[in-house]
Length: 333
Ligand code: FPP
Ligand code: MG
View: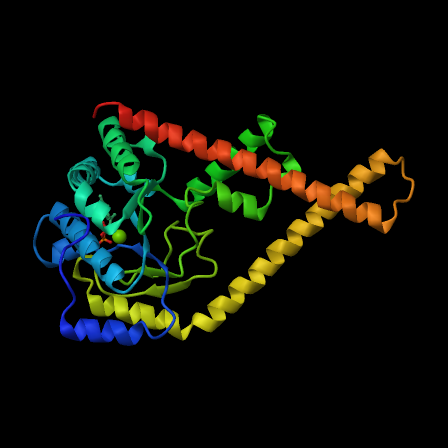
């Protein structure tokens, strides 16, 4: 099974998709693909078969998303917590991933045709070396594609990602690229593995579990979260439509919450810049009063300086990440 299943929607599915598309559509959908082992038990097949069928369902779901005009999908394929599973199961999942990423390398034409960019989010160094190389090759080979994006969270948890983002900012301060006062909520967001994506509009978890299990905790505070009882390998086009409908029913309140958050973030940044400028003026003028015009000019120039520092730091961070993938991909698997 390839990464995007070929095939068109049936007439009824196409009709329903068009009705759905008359409403606001999510641009970015995230999936917690849960229930593979329960599916295997239910069907009296081996556990590994449940995961293989889980992958096949992902390929099918990607096709539905494209048909619905959803151009970005993020999936939880392997949590760092999953390393606690039996050695046999972990090895099976690593083998499956290796097989699928190798397959992806053979599918360049199809991925190019659809313009699919595949990103892998997580700490690759936790994975077996051969898999790291194959993943890096796949990521590098699709990174120029810009029509649709598949983010595969592999060796990922949200807490690990947030901790890593904090470390990256500490590195930036250590390197003299940013000041500790530049650390902000917005900057932390830009240091996450997901920095190149907008936040998901809709997060779907299958299998009836009603937890986020350390997935995209930072990114989904203003997303529509839908829990569905179906096991992932049994997921259908209609289940996806139902989740999109839930998103549409909650669209206004989600947008409102996002706008309020954006305003609060802007206000926080302005307040932080103002207090840095006040401190600088206090130091520079030995406590002598400063007129409103000079204060305003100082604020403008401080803000421009901060934005430049932050932008240089983010470029350095992106370069560091690109270099990692570049080096990994140049090694033979
Ligand atoms: C959760 O079901 C699923 C996983 C831990 C693995 C998900 C992986 C895939 C669907 C394959 C994707 C592979 C690539 C390369 C993208 P579970 O094992 O927790 O099942 P359960 O909830 O029934 O116990
Ligand atoms: Mg599970």
